[in-house]
Length: 310
Image (cartoon, rainbow, N blue to C red; front, side, top):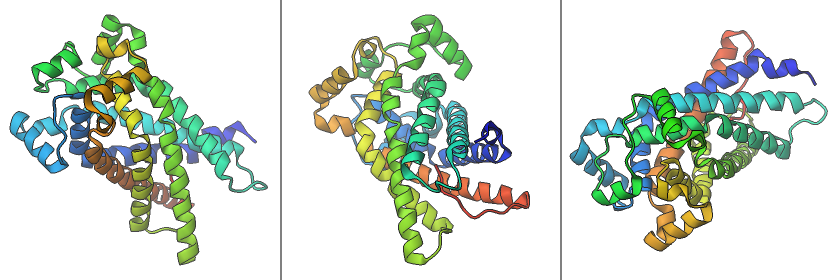
């Protein structure tokens, strides 16, 4: 075991590829993420199908509203994916040996550690991102009471600075606990994705999956993990917006508040656009990531077949 593996060029390639794949996928499907966020934090916005929700938002606030906050989202996602992919592949290279070979439990543990480190280091970016995304939104008077009144932010750094100055540095990590619990999301996704790849290998007699196959397997894995962990994502969205009322609540209290005001269905508000957005984004990210990694190694003269994506 050598720490040189942690700082290898190969690990850096995986990190850059993961960041590039995530940014590309999010750019393509960003309007779906906008609709999901609005449904999660605006209690007065009625749940509708995705197409109707997009059309209503365009009618009310114009087409640019679908891309509000894109730049800070891409910044946050790029940093987040880089940290996750670098940590995951770096740590896996440290613990992986020829004698032990593949070990699903070990990979899941490494993925959980990578996810936890990612959450701790990038949560302030996502808190600022949530504020910027809602900035300028035309919300009802009812939602204004719930969401609170926040200053105008000029960008990610300005948002982080103002949030820290007005609400304290701890506010930059609001929603971190459910985020840490949501580390289970990629763990579930990883397990299902690997199981599907194993079945693919058995059925087709090859471990090298084609682009369409990678896309479909990534979509299936992400859709299942999203449905199972969605209530936690609702709580996370409520906490990240940082209102005085919500900041005083525990996770259990927020769950109770949502069920009391909106019923159990409130825990799944915005699931349709989230499911559509997250499965398509994850599947496209897997595809871009795998292709970029394979292409870079090909250019280096060290061609490697498509590897599993974290």
